[in-house]
Amino acid sequence: MRWQSSVSSPDWRQVVADFQRKANDTSASLAATDVESVIRVCTQSDRTREALDAINRGEKRGVSAPLRSHMQICRSWARKGQADRALAMMPELRDRFDEQFQLVTKNKSSVYDPLLSVFKAQGDWRSTHAAIAQMHELGVTPTLRAFRVLMLTAAKAQRKDTLLTTVEFVGKKFPNVWTDVATLTAMCQALVDVGENQRVMEIYRKLEDDWIHQEASTMLVNQFLLAAIRGGDNKNGKKRSSNNNLSSIQLAMDIFDRMREARKAAPDDFTFATYMMELEKRGEWAHVLDLFNAMLDTQARNQNVLNDELKRPLINALSCSAVIRALHKLHETSQEGQKVEDEAKDSSNSTRKSKGQQRKLKQDLSVVLKQLRTLDLRSIGHASTLIDTLDEFRLFTAARQTFKRVLDEGIIQKTPWRLKDGFEIDLHTFSRGVAKCAVVSAFEEITRSQQGVSDASLAGNAPLQDLRIITGVGRRSQTFMKPVLKQEIADLKVELFDTFEEENMAV
Image 1 (cartoon, rainbow, N blue to C red):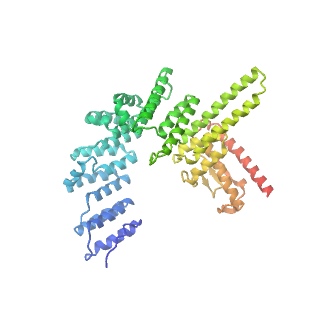
Image 2: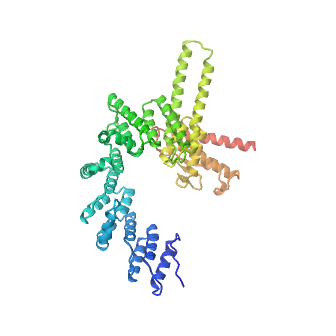
Image 3: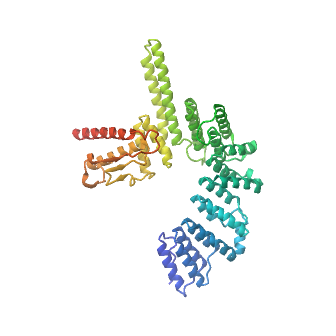
């Protein structure tokens, strides 16, 4: 009977059982690919011990696993938080696969790359540092990627001393680093993360203008833009002098203009949102709208280009939030000016002008609200900012539709905040606008259930009066320490109950 592999099966147990039967059957032929396949399935499920057992069973039959299979086991140990055990395997592998071990490391890639990927994902700078030290001990030349991971993980852990030492070492050890886009990007991103914005701007000034125009990537120049903008703040978060602020925004504008002309560093959604939020912070509302119009034009051009793979939309949740605020702020300013004019002289046109301004605001807002349907909402922080802004300016329908998308797309789950069969709502982790949308969403679901519209059947069909809402202190709102949310939720609950009673009376 011919043995059939179950490697395509997602059940690692079945794969292991099939392999063990074949390994124990001395009349069956066992190949290196059999061992390799079962190790791959086991390590994908982090079943490291089963993978090691497969190696032992294979060796008893005279079949050895290849180096890449051993590295998969190393990576699995690292993913499980046992970096020391993973690194301890490397000297053994060097001794066992000496020639192959060295061949792999002569390429731009390294045998350590799988481990480095795990350490980067975990933000583990200590294990990254230990891996680089081990490379030196084993006679393996550390690649630039190893130092990129060290810089990023050190910054994530706010190990500024380690980061600065690494940056200095890389600059001296690798003369070509100043034309290596990936390394420059990691270096600048790490420096920005620890607040070393001036160092990033020094790197920016060090690079040749033509190289930035021809070779720099969007991600790299975004770091320069971010550093220029943040250069107006000191380490304590307080503003520097107005002259410094002026120079920082001027520098940011220059970088932004260069990106629009660059060959490989075209502005993306991060670029526009970063620049726009700085304009918002400075209250330059007209410039916010100018930038938004430029985004619309650029996005329209991108969509008209054949075979355009750019990519995601330039407009994101943060930029939409900034534009909505800018439109309302400019409308308020216009109304105040109209009020002063009306007080100065009795104008019969004042009412008509006011209606015209209100109509223009609605038209402008409709352009922004159309963008909401295609926004990427996977960042709950960005989505929360947008929903808060929509709620603040009483765009309740748009806020609730956006919240529904966040729910439908699984960006937040119901379980953590819908408790006791849905009749207890915990809003501790929500921002102000999101919390209010969550209450409305829960109320509507309960109402549909009680009216038999929804398939959901909440326990006992309890009355809406039994709904318990826990407001807590909330997040992301400067006014949360005052009893603002609690009162707003109470008012919202009364409004929802009145609506529910009117609907029932009308039936």
